[in-house]
Length: 347
Ligand code: AMP
Ligand code: MG
Image (tube, rainbow, N blue to C red):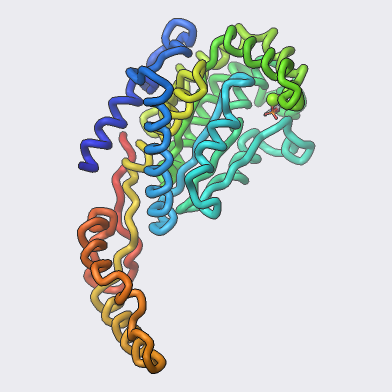
């Protein structure tokens, strides 16, 4: 049942995956209006709800296992739906297990460090999902399209020699490999909106007074550089989609589809990790049962010895039936019950 669902999700996201080593030309290779077999928005909304439910379930297990972390990287042109995607992820999960960071123009302190420094400061902990709203990829996107940003980075002459961008791709790939080798899975999502859909969305921000605050003339200035950005994104996708951290190009001309697509990739990653609730050893279980007995003995006169057991007489049976595959097999001894190996990332 779980395997079938995982297979379905894997098939759904396959067209979005950038094959490592392939050369991408965005406009030619990825259609922003693709609907991937989902015919109607109504059908999409049901899928969306299912995605939120799965995400919430897996996130709880990820946090309980406290072994793997997940970093979600969101990149896009303005208006593509980064904020909506984040709102959607947050709607179903425990806020204690998720952190969102938005990256803006770097501060003086940040410019005084190497280019990956500020991103490394914001990585998720084990058991957490971290979301980067813009990310280290800005260092090969906006910084490339507007090279005055690179001038501000105070690099020594020697570090500016040769092809800075190729070198940064390599450094980013190596950094992501290091993270993934150490238990942090990276989900990279490019929300792919078309130039015409962006025009419509910018106009909407002007036409609806409640949305005026979202309008930024900077977005219109960036739109002027559309082709440069498309080229820069195509290069990024061609050079930094790796076996350990592949890119997914999510069709974003329909907001609802963008959210399903992005949600499916995240769920798929969590399914691969397959985090489990830690199981206790026989000895620990025995200790729990002794405490249980002591607590039951404290029942006041007329009260149930164990109110929970009384309310849910079949709880134990249900738990055993429904949650077994979510739980690590009990360890042989009590050394470190939570540390069960999970699925290896795809290599
Ligand atoms: P927003 O996400 O709309 O709040 O805008 C944030 C702004 O910060 C965008 O214009 C980005 O291009 C800019 N930005 C983000 N990262 C960098 C960076 N590393 N260097 C220069 N500008 C950046
Ligand atoms: Mg903006």
